[in-house]
Image (cartoon, rainbow, N blue to C red; front, side, top):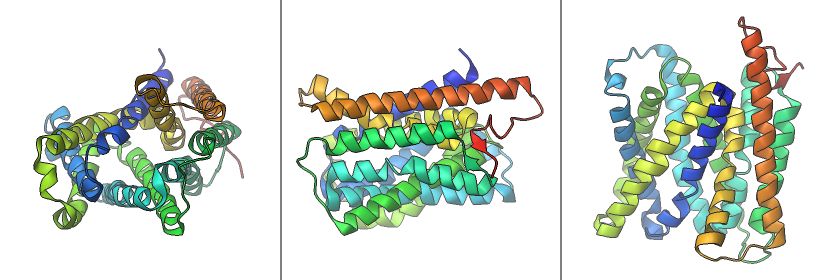
Length: 310
């Protein structure tokens, strides 16, 4: 298996783990979910610190690391607040469709601005297909969706935060190993969330159900999933990796249909197929870039990197 295929598989595996976040978060009371989001960052940082075998304390952090560290921490902390707030105002379907569906768009645009190159056709087609499929998955049932201007705004903000953290992870993993970079981002993100945790957390988080739920969110949907996500970013870039994470809601829907016997409409199944096709398109585009880069050790061409000339 080539490094690109491993990277695509790694990003997809991270997305599958994120797909379990919703069912587990449902075990936690609505008022405690934002606090749980902050606590899971701290737990994830401890997990990755152990994976890194203490390297974050021995690593040489430079002034150039400050921007990605701050950007990643603000992105990962801001996403917790914005996304869980959007769910309370607009519901799960709308918040997921906008908050996750717009993330690849923001990531591609921010990457294009930073590199001063527009996204390539492969990324554009893959992202458009994935967003279209996600909209079908969220709205094709025609029921259970609500509209809230505040919720919509928070969902868009969540998408911006998520894409910002992905771009920051890409920048920081260029100078540090994945576990070390993520330990720094998650630890700083948890520190930023500390006041929110102190204000919103209740004693319900100390019940056996609350403790088990938060532990799972921290170890599995934060430590393990972000590590897999970062491994994908390192080889295929933030834009492609974020597009692949749209597998998360599709996987959650399939799990609900198979394990919980929830009914999916034909339109929703079509959306799942579209998301799968989009991941295939994105993976093939990244693979082509990897082939050209290995043939040209001096560096990938603009076309190989998934971008085109202005």
